[in-house]
Image (cartoon, rainbow, N blue to C red; front, side, top):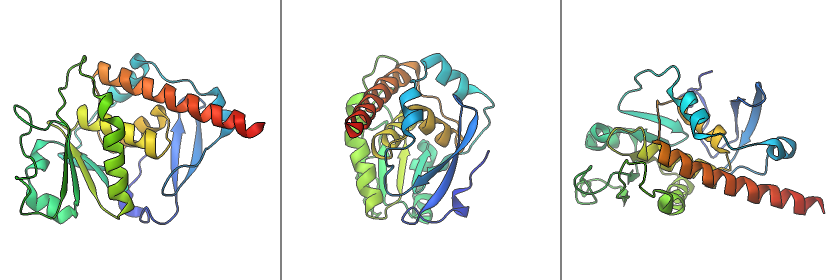
Length: 226
């Protein structure tokens, strides 16, 4: 299944997004507005966070080149260093906000000064693409930055060196925190538009985030029933 964002209305309007859920082998229709509302109570109660191995099997299957930058969610783009340094490209895309998930030397050393001739807001995350790096401390701050940008009708470019691990991890966390997707759903949405594969350490940290968010949503559902 392939979705072309250019064929969909702007995020401010309501649109339907088809997701294929691996655990139930059926197509679900998700109504997407500015934020997800508590969806599918019965399915949420049965949901289990996938293992790192399951996520890797999915993300590494049927890989193909996806270029320097791809739109993976309305007005949210993931890309690599090449795209990050191509200011004419970013300008033509209408990018208003940049998240550098490999900020500072010896990574992608751009920073606000590099973009001083562009009207963009810059957010730097100094993360190493190593399995023992704790990237989870940046999940909520980055999600808030992206959410604020989208709320002001901005376009967000999230990048690292290759646009595969660090940047993808932060976008997945944003979708889970702000759009209330599960980790499975977020991975499937992004994977439709770009080859990504966060390292196993990052996947495990996303799993812990997923378990925490799902547990809280289940708790709210139970409280609502009382």
